[in-house]
Every structure is written in structure tokens, then in C-alpha cells.
Image (cartoon, rainbow, N blue to C red; front, side, top):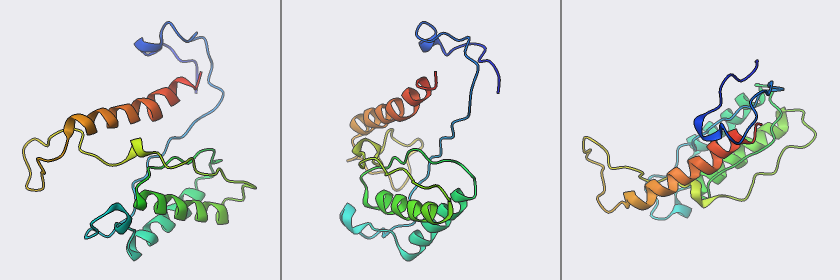
Length: 154
């Protein structure tokens, strides 16, 4: 760690940068486990046996990192909520923390989507995807959950 040398251009007028870091934040992005691909609705796209095992093993591994868990954020997709719940169960059993954070309410802005049309085109491309809507939502999620979180470090 050390002194931050220069701020990102968007923050240069907002934050005094004579700040010396006092700690480390770790941001982990975890994708859901394997799920039922033949489900018609989100509720039917639950984790498979393999997906549940993947989530539990991820939780076990995360507990070995020795982090103090302060926040769990997840989308409102069935497979994401199941994955987060299984990870939290494993963290609670193995972490030794007296209390683990309660996951925030599932956030629909974090749902999967198609932010851009694939180039080159691929066989699975679905022209009915609304790239303009999904792209804006994915960008908003990044700004809200990643960029703003970084600003709160100071």
C-alpha cells in the first residue's frame, strides 16, 4: 500500500488525494453455478446438482481466504440467489465470524443481459435481444456497484 499518486480524472475535484491507504478492500465477482438450461422461466432455471456442488465448493474456498465478509450483493435471478445462499451457508459454517452479513435484497439491475451484439455473429445470437436496454442497464449496474463503490474508499 502507499499514497495514491493521482486521482482518476472524474474524481480529481471531488477527493483530496493526500490520502494514505488504511486497508484493503476485496471485490469478488462470482458467477452462478450450473443451472437447468431447459427451464422456460427464471424460476425453472434452478441450480442443478452440479451447480449446488459448485456453489458449496466456492463457499468453502472463499472461507479459506480469511476475509471479513461485509457485503453480499446478488441479482434477483433464481440461480444467482441460490448460489449466494449456498455460499453464505458455507461461509457461516467455516469462517468463525460471529455474524455474517445478510445479503442485500436481490437487485434486478444485476440480471444477465445482452449489452452488445456479438461480433462476429454467432449461432446463438437472438435478434430479439434488446441491446439498447440491456446495455444501458449493465452500464448502470457497473457504475452503481463498481465505480461508486471505488469512490467511497476515500
